[in-house]
Image (cartoon, rainbow, N blue to C red):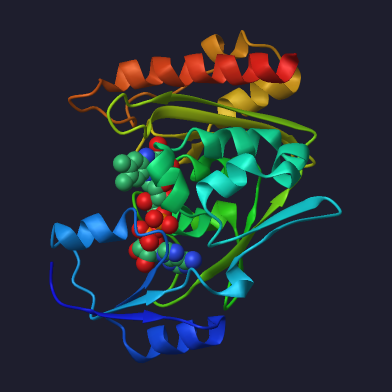
Length: 265
Ligand SMILES: Cc1cc2nc3c(=O)[nH]c(=O)nc-3n(C[C@H](O)[C@H](O)[C@H](O)COP(=O)(O)OP(=O)(O)OC[C@H]3O[C@@H](n4cnc5c(N)ncnc54)[C@H](O)[C@@H]3O)c2cc1C
């Protein structure tokens, strides 16, 4: 690990200023990804700006048709929140399936979404629900935020402040976890939203994506059989030592079937 300076930012303004003054500085949230990256010398920031104590980045609020969650909210807080469980139970279920208890006690919503690991769980909920990513500079629609493997629309030094989730009439998440890491080999988030039925897939491809053919078929007839019959291009799915692209395609179908079945009860 290279030497770096550590600063605990007292406010959002102070964090943004520190990051804008030094392009080699990085925000530190739960550290679950960033610290192993430093240890492996895959990144060498000059400064880590700890954003976990900033009040604007914390809290869970339900107002009207929106559930807002601060970026520094830890996974276990989302999983155990009565507000989340009442508004979007599928989101609480998803958070409870991330990694292990240690990861859930440190990792944060903002860190996960900013990192955009192709096998992370939250991006599927953010995209599937059509959430809005609120930063210190602007608001970004989920459809414009995820740009592929570990890539997002965030500019250097831009901070996620909170995520606004529109509350769906129903939603479910089903995941096939990698047995060693807990990351999704395939995860499918399905939501009945005011914009229609949305299906977002994580883990199986190089980045989170909407499964348009399943959305179309489910809007004609909402039944688990759609998961087996909707067209799914497997050529673009991941193939590695853990599974072929065809295997991942089959996992997507099975996870979709489980999510649809959950929503049908
Ligand atoms: C063993 C293990 C198992 C895991 N299993 C899973 C799993 O099953 N599913 C899953 O989804 N995830 C999993 N994770 C990832 C974990 O859930 C964390 O969410 C993720 O590592 C990043 O969140 P963090 O808060 O730790 O961010 P950090 O590691 O602190 O930061 C990650 C990146 O985001 C940037 N960043 C952080 N916060 C912000 C912000 N507010 N605005 C802008 N940029 C920001 C940082 O600068 C850094 O580049 C696992 C991690 C580990 C170590």
